[in-house]
Image 1 (cartoon, one colour):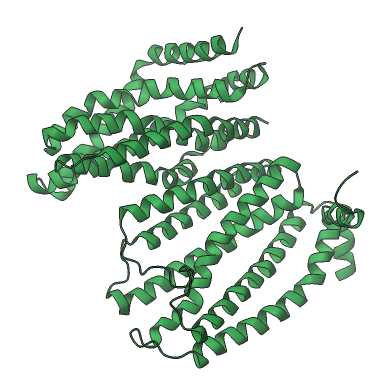
Image 2 (cartoon, chains in turn brown, purple):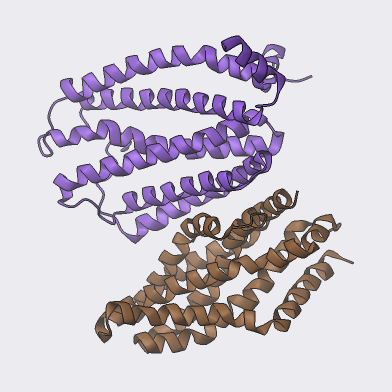
Length: 224
Length: 253
């Protein structure tokens, strides 16, 4: 089997596994909607206030939803031993790991795009910001999966890694949060957002190249 | 043949053995302590007594003699940790692991001091304890990065594996620190610009600058002392059942 074939086999396998457990797939989505719903209840339903807060609220919720879904990235593979098989395979672990991250994003990150319009409606986000919200979600949710993968790989061997995972990963999410929510915020007031989107794209490309290396090193450490 | 002289490489090989490192640390600590106390006394005397009062901020600017060196140390130690992490991952040097693990709480301590003194200075200057200013915020995130390192090390039972995990995390963190720093700076800034490292002439009076630099060097020596002490303890814990620890205990009993 060539490396490319192995890469796509990993993606296909993970997608298949995810579709067999559809209920689990929907959980981060419901969580995302639920958190956004909590904000009007907590701060009051003044449309003006909600509109100013909308980009930040949507992005913090997306961050938390991504964080919640991270644990499923390597957990089941670690428990049933397929992770060890991946380590033993003749192919580069970094590439296989990248396949797993992509599959994870397709299952947990991409669906967030579907509910984003609903949330924008809830919070009264201006229509002109919708396109930018989608763009930032497309660019930045893969970043969340990528950065998170390092944290998961470091903590997958722990019985209660959840708390530590958030402590490791959330500080690294700060730049993503800043640029993504700022882009939506500016788009809502009709300002240009080219710089923010370019930086997000640059971070995404850098992460695509760099992240698999520490992730595979950390997985080797966790499995031993 | 190797470019490194035999004496140097022998020194490194011997330092890599735990009992030798332990004895060496014991021998260095009194000297380091003496230098630290001298520098600290000179720096504090110069900073709190000799340096002139600032025409705008009065005497409250004098907190920089703690705040600025602590902030420098907070970043310096994280970078050092990443370097030790790289050494530990590439050459599997046990002492690099031990020093990395020993440095994390000290770095977190300096970060905390920088935050607290910054907040104390902010109260009379900005009229509030906390501002979401760029440098304060990135210092706070740095504190979270340190806490992540400490708690990850604590959570993994096997300490060799924990040290490797922490090395990877320190490397990932050090790549991210500039990104975090600049993104936060871009996000918002209220902080007064850097006064020491400005190109050309620093915008600080020499009588104020010299004590500041003395304090910065004193803090570096303090870090060395604290890290060596913590590394000694870590070694004793890790190798509690080995022969050299038993001999050591018998000798001291």
